[in-house]
Image (cartoon, rainbow, N blue to C red; front, top):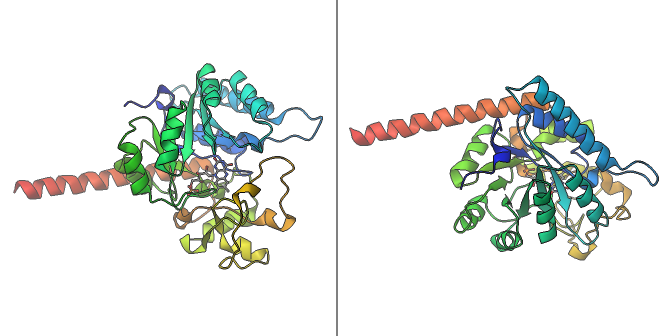
Length: 333
Ligand SMILES: Cc1cc2nc3c(=O)[nH]c(=O)nc-3n(C[C@H](O)[C@H](O)[C@H](O)COP(=O)(O)O)c2cc1C
């Protein structure tokens, strides 16, 4: 099935995924200008009581800056942006945020945790599409039944609330019945991995952690440096901090006085996305990351990182083509 027109002008088949705290307007604008879909969780736009609504201000800024870019660069238009909605009973802002996103005609809606028909209808009402992120094939079927246009397969090794299923198994199972838009996530951080996700059957690569180590990310320098210094050995999969399993940087846990290799387990009912869902202060510096950060060697601007991804992706395509041609010649001789 052809991809929806919203993905027509991408420089690379990449969605830069939404990340709690890390993704703000500066990062999203840089990602879209660089030619990949930029995104942020609606919940990152927070205001204190009595202050103007931040989500409205962010959408205005993103829309206006991208419009200006498109007028000035008609041959290199920006990629579209996406807003992530956390569909969970503790998210008391959901109705308000849906209404704001409809008014701003958000082009791509990414829904996480709960699949609800009214969110997909809201996305469509503003001319947008809805992608739902899933960690298994059962949730994937449910999301499509409820009217999502496409899926994001969150495989093992992803940052944030990652799944535990191999990307090979997950994509193969979803592709056995679904031929619509499919993004794959989990440890994708270089051009070869983008091409590999397409070879497996996905349409788009969904990249998070690698963007933490960019100049525009809303993350403190030591966090960026930990991504640069880290490898998969430095990641632990635990449900201790939110009640749901996610991947975290071990050195950040150790710096908070805990043993990352001996964390107790927790309870999913403790998950809370409300403003009042205060975590212990010492957890503020427990940092999330997927396993793919061995591919990240330095903090770059988003523009430079996307240019590097593109170079690697084109090289990977040529290398594969050379192998295919060599194989064909050998079998013909
Ligand atoms: C620090 C961090 C915060 C995240 N926050 C969110 C979030 O608020 N909403 C969401 O849908 N996904 C969130 N994710 C998951 C990402 O959107 C994406 O699935 C994941 O980063 C992809 O795997 P990768 O990090 O290995 O590239 C987060 C990931 C990280 C690393």
